[in-house]
Length: 485
Image (cartoon, rainbow, N blue to C red; front, side, top):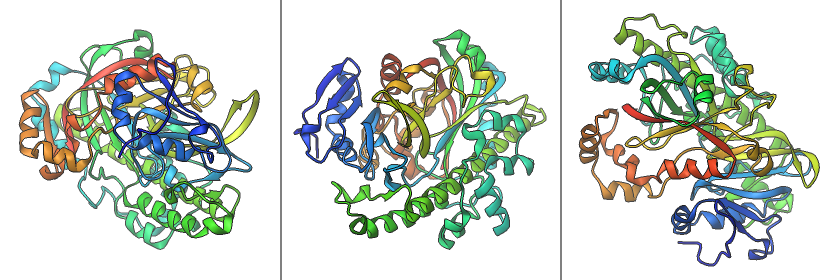
């Protein structure tokens, strides 16, 4: 597979355009963010064809966008962003993805790297034992049906009221940890049954908890505003989503959308783009169910963060107080949101699909917590477990170019199958340990799928969004401990 026939036009050193002439059905051009080297990697994948396909969606406005971490996905590319007219456009469940509100949460500590060194094994064990992981595994708390419905409606606030964190955590969570418009009645019994036992679990695949340290500071003022302004400072990143609950909601509504395409009069370039008019009954049901999954995911990360605080407490002899491990921020990267942007000179309300892309709002944006209003929204970009991850802040360019969005990670350059063929789990463990990285993993067989070589270089990826003006680099983080499913 490849993109050999796509006529890419260079806009500048960080952007490439797929013109509308490539496909008569395209309603808008495509734009892909990449430097010279990344565009070659992207060309070896089929993701550019997906950028062009997304541009055929009814009611799409502006551009169909591909971030520098772009790679082949379901319908939309992972790293894809598209906005549809809120009145006359569509919502595509495949454009949000199966792991609804998969996201990243960052905690700061007042520890420095040297204080972890002799205790890395103990801390890794404590984290692994506290944070349930693995395929299909149970979570920290099995819910009653009544509790599950409360989680669907209230998200992180429910978890905080149950003792998993503090009010201050909500202030630094995107949407305060609760997407409005949740409709539990739009969620299937099967989805409810899949999720009810999984709250407070990491899952598997690329989901993880990592203890890291601040290795490089690009912007001291912004780093201090975020509470991560000391070289060597220890932080913890949690990356996970809505588990089987969100997956089932995606499955349910993709089937519903596929069955209705003829009735809606849609003839799409790819059946995986199956969509519903936003104001149709099915569209409203999907958005209500999606909000339930998003809220479950925020509550899930809230419980996991409580577990991280408990693990640090058990090893370092402190109470698990939020002030000792304050939360920096939580961003989601598989979601649809109703937002306003200026498009062709007029303000428009749109449904922004972010599939493997994260929000990157600039300084002064009203959605920002007061404490970050001057520097912009924290943007959390995990890399791979062998190299580095990054913290950025949103920049004004995101509002002008990308519907307030930027990349969400390094992005795969190898399939899971190819990664497993290239290295064994045992050899990968040895390589990571040789770098001083302590690993705890539920399945060594699955570990090879996440080999650093399977991912693009996150430094290259974040350099592109920094240079394009979508977000500004703040700090680089390097791993000390990795806990995976």
